Image (tube, helix red, strand yellow):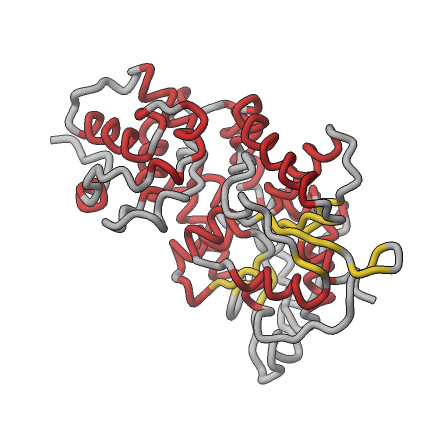
Length: 358
């Protein structure tokens, strides 16, 4: 008898109530039941029971079309762990040559610790001692660590340096590698778990990350007590000073990280920090996906852009100076979209934004 594809207990929780439908970006886009969490779970059950072959075109399309934003989880009365089910689905659906080649290539590079360390050094990402002289937050002798991120240290090296400036006591071990989120989200659960466990051994104390997606993945493997996203780590601090522009207090809005919000429930912490230093404006869709969704923007650029365009319209209507992200993928997505529209709004990471205080 073949091993089951999905965790049977997780799969059985869905009661097909439909509460997930209004929360799902792809269902809102298409109105197609198969493009909703409920519809996709029906497909998963058909795959599990052998009613649909692995090469069924609807299975192939929906495994790829889903953003994996997990917006369905907070509204689900049955507590369906949809994000975990999606990872199990792709782990089975994307085996071998079925895996999108770009996802495979990005995962291959991210798993090469020496390579990403070299590229991070060349790009000027944060560097530091293996053991900090005092605790990151309260100076009581802890050894909390800053996670650099694989592609973040190459694309946005200033973010880790900004985080290091905000919390000078954090240790920054040099040999750290990828946390495995990229692998887990793209059809390689075993590698995702293995890399997270290795990172847990490499980084002492609480792992502080500037990536919401990474935080959720690490928490799923190592436990929530081992990881804190930067804004949650700083939540107890009162931040002094204002971010000003043209002689006035800056207007700022936030784009949530889907995994941080829906997976770990981190919602108020970044908003509290931003409100302390600028005039905060809430976007109507701040809590919904921007279309980045990890590798989604690269694998399905047309669908990603459709989702982003509505977000950009809201940003323009809000008349803000900055839109802040707490995840590097979201930051790249917003910067690309705003640049395409020739907008004067600046997209920045929250760590960089907090350093703009006067």
